[in-house]
Length: 387
Image (cartoon, rainbow, N blue to C red; front, top):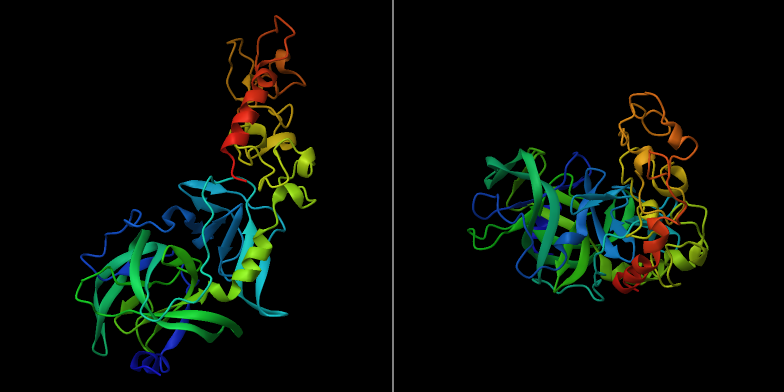
């Protein structure tokens, strides 16, 4: 056993879900750098905020995180993506023995590529890029001769680097086994953005050679060390995804348009759902159709057809037509089908028709712009969507 891991034998492992925000702390400079994608970006945009912690978007609708982070909407690029209810799958360390990794599926398409998952454990000393969200570096701090820093109350998404100190070893974590990778936080005199996770970074990513090699799960600190601090000699644990790769690929092979389920909750299944253009489409939602995109486009707390009264059909292009937009569009003092947010007088031209895009009386009986433009929009979507 190396000297580093001997030291860790007397340290204790601290679950990273203990604080409400996630991060990686870097030793270089003043600690505020690396808040944009690294030069050789392995997947910066795929790491997002999840339940105040972190998660990684794998592609084809699937998110991977630590099980103790849990399921929930993930924020990627400033947009919150909803979860398919009941889609969570807990990974196993061995048959019928669960481990601290969780997969779940998103209703809507973030438009990101599929991440490659490492097929073999990284070798010792391999350089990794760690990505998480949260705490900035605070004031200097020393514990038992080990220098480092306290954590600031501010936070930001950040990346840093670290070399693999121990590869593919068995870790008992929260009473359950986990195949893990270890990273030592070493004093490199600022030569590189040496990184360590901070409390709350669970579910973040460790990339090696452009592949997703690990999911961050825990850190190690010395007994008696201030909990909101990091000093040289502390360490990071990540799940070794090469060990769980076959399970991950088996689960994520299930695609929304060929699984026999109503993934977007509109009562339509697989190819009967207009959001599905083929069996290998990973989403039942349609990114170009507001009433079938999986988002609350008009911020009224109701999502898509049939839940949002502004949607006449699953193929309607607006969730907030004139009769459901809380605006007196025709200036007659009456608003929408329901009187609007203020509970005013409903517009009689909207009665029983919240999906109408006119508050004034109709002057014709045309099919409407939605049907006219639907075909080219769906054709464009089919060209843009990933198989």
